[in-house]
Image (spheres, helix red, strand yellow):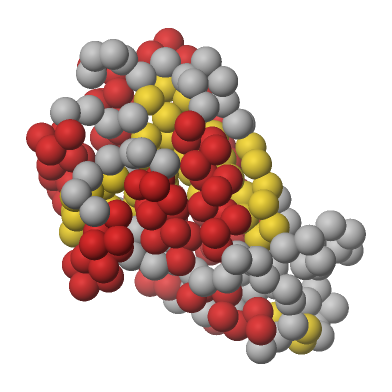
Length: 241
C-alpha cells in the first residue's frame, strides 16, 4: 500500500515497487490521478480512492486490499501536505488542522489498519515505511504545522518499531530533502532562508527516492533501515545556523 500514490514521491515509489515485483495498492483522494499510475504498473495493482484523514475510508481501503491480495506486506505512509509559508500568528486553526489531519493522523490511521492485518495474517508480519522529511530534524522558516507533524512522525516511527517487534512488523523512516515534485516547485524560484533571504535550492530526481524505498521494502523482516536520509547533496541543510 502506497498512500499519496497519485503524484511525486508516491507515484514514483509505487511504480518502482511494481517493477520490483510487489503487487501494489494505490491510495489517494483522486481517482483521475491514481488511474494513470495503475496503467503503468499493470495487472497486479488496485486503486483505493480514500482520504487518509478519514477513519472509515481508510478502514475500507485496507479491507479492499486484503480482499484483493489476501495479505499486506508493506505500507508506505507517504501522503502529506503543507500550509502557507506565513508566521504562526497568521495561521488559522483550519490550516493547522489540515496539515495535522493528513500528515500525522493519516499516518496513524493507516499504520493502525496495517498492524491489524499484519498481526493476524499468516505468515505474520510486514513492514511500514513512514515519510518523515528532513523537516523531522531541522525546520524551515514559517513551517510550524509541517515541522511539528514531521517531528511527530519520528516519534510514531520509533513507537511502531518498538511495538511491532513482537509481531515481526518492522518500521522505518525515510527523510527526504528536495526531491523534485509538486511540493518542491517553489525551490526553483527561491526558498526563504533562516536569514530572511530568498535562494534557489538544488533538487534531485524523485527516482532516487523510489530506489531507496524499494531497498528498504525489499529487506527481510529481520533487518530494518530505521532511518534513512536522501537529499540533494548541495541543499542548505547541513551547516544551517
